[in-house]
Length: 441
Length: 189
Ligand SMILES: Cc1cc2nc3c(=O)[nH]c(=O)nc-3n(C[C@H](O)[C@H](O)[C@H](O)COP(=O)(O)O)c2cc1C
Ligand code: FES
Image 1: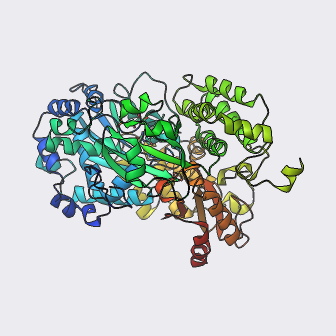
Image 2: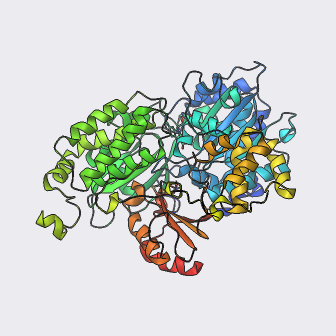
Image 3: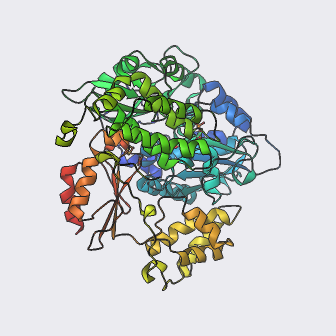
């Protein structure tokens, strides 16, 4: 449901059903709502059967890349004699995204249960939930939920009396977007600088502490207990026509929009109705100009493109962008695209871990040139330079933070070239009232 | 990264990390007393059971130091290094990677305002200006003359639907608009 908004009748609230209900946070409250039944059932099943069920459900990773979760889990080889680990990625720092925060704030036990099931399925005894340091309340809620789960014997050396050991630990990050990248997160968890690692080896071979590791997003893991409870067929049926994208998805809606918040809809929902009916459209007297539908790292859509989009993995790709993390950033006609793209470039420059030259230099120069254009000091060749830098930043680095910085710049120049050119020709930002100095010049 | 000259949005942007170190006694933390004794030592020992390596307790250990002391000084890094079997240089390498560890003392109230695009389009820069004005901090990253406030801009706080989120120490405020800032600051004084 669109917390802090009321649930909209067209939402399908599976993961967000209890958002805003403080009673659901406690272990007793969670059990009253059916909590930990799925874990009990899981512990009586073979791990391979769980993996198969998740595969059949069609669940795909909600952290950004959309990799099939069951397939990822099947990379973990049972009986290899090595300790296995599950990492839950709760670093949520992609601009526009704030769904994992609400999941952990309102339904922390859902994540504890998801982690326990995931750990069991991949043959791990330990799951680490890596939560960004700024998430003070989610950290508190999760710490408390884990404490309750240990106290009641749900976690620990004899989880739910099954004789199996499942430990879940909350680990607090310390401020770094890059630690959301899976191998950077593993380095950070090990007590290192959060630099992404060269792959291969992939985490399933050598992940955290050099051992086989699976990493999943918060939203991915909280979907799993529902699949166990209701079956793969039930989950698969939640889509509107495209069998490759199944289930519900939580979208975080923000920026210039009447009702910002989280909304949960089935895969295949029409984006136009989502934006206007559920989210209430743009603020009074304004019009949507651009939408960034999947967090700041996916290509910017014009509103016309967005209105024609079907909300699932393939639907967003068909309309020139990606589902990404589901962070829907709305930008209205009073905003300067150049300024906002410059601000995104600054974000990536600030967050680059600086290992790769293309990223370290590319994000910094992109920011300088973008800010120069925004300030009215751009030159005729700047757009070509930006595109050239973007080209050098794409598909050339250890992780895709570099590519993510190029994406808004390239799609922005493609779709809003007139705004860039107006800045360069007029030597000022056309969205800002003219100052005396600018008029004189 | 140095910011280019330009309009209001392109001004210099300082974080606590960007400030040049001052080598006065306060910054050298000469009177540092060990943190990992008694209850805090026990806490660390419990943390160590969670990981297969001692090094993995580094971020949690640094958090403990910052909770106790307000910032992470060089003597603190040396203590952390000693208890975890690392070198001080290694620990410093890690501390400098993460934005949330303060490498200098900060004001009693450390104010972090998100100004990344989703909040930016909702007026986050006005919120920053209002905080600077109300606290008397001369610039981003500088502490107010009364030593109470340090204001910085930060990147996405993961609460974009609640623009503009502001963190004051460990308190997370949602939906802060510029006109709410005077009462927020007033309540802290
Ligand atoms: C720069 C960067 C930042 C990322 N940040 C996050 C994040 O905050 N949360 C997240 O779940 N995934 C993030 N990812 C994606 C992860 O690398 C990884 O694909 C994901 O956690 C896998 O989980 P899933 O299969 O359940 O989606 C990020 C990736 C990159 C390249
Ligand atoms: S952009 Fe401000 S919280 Fe995400």
